[in-house]
Image 1 (cartoon, rainbow, N blue to C red):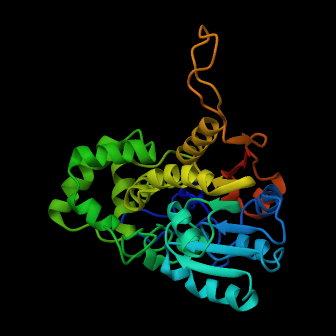
Image 2 (cartoon, rainbow, N blue to C red):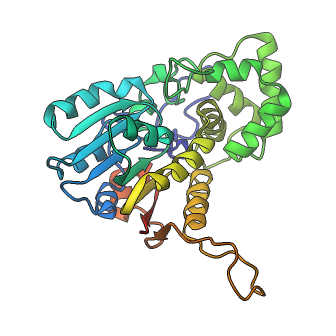
Length: 335
């Protein structure tokens, strides 16, 4: 999947009231990021039980399913009902080894248990928003084409970005933009949103993007749209993404069997910091003060870290520029 920092437009291509023109062609095809590296990291056994917690268009899932045979099983999970058509295709191709469940990856343990599995041999999470979602204007994730300001992974549940923009007070908007978008001009943007919504509702992606651009301008020479961080912040808030990452990483480790591996692909520093911290915490043993001669905390590591973060090769970035911010981190469950 991807993050909005990969979404750019041609300099000068869009102003207030103008259409947005992507600097890279919009396509409905989905390219799985770090696919070879992720599959290798999972060290798949043909008879193992695996979870793809962010099924999306099924790119990573298909690579896993191709390596399984009965009694091996792949459990695909996604909270976006729009991916069910892709899941049906994979179910037809691998009827004996693949099953899809609508839900959140943080609920993988409960989902696995409902299917009769108390532990699994591998878990893959590919975080962020998918190219499929970015390219569908009606989902409201992108300002590359105008659409309703929605941004929900599951459009049947929760509060949309338009509702959040319409109801959050100025201080809350400042907090969201600063914490989730790392937007240094959060206060100016929040003030502009509040002033604009008193005149008219902000209901479309183009309206919000144009408002942000009018408010903070565009740095000369940059190809990244000034609304990029605002869109990221709202998407994270609407989908509770950071808490979801924390819950998903911790519960995923608990679900692994001895020797099982968890591989997580992130696309921005907020996600990556959480995954890195959760993995490091699980890999840490005794935390007693150094002056205590004998361990009294009883803490033992539950995983071992498998190397440092893996990044896309130059060839992958050249072929798929949206992959450039990706990082893959992997842990293995200890006995």
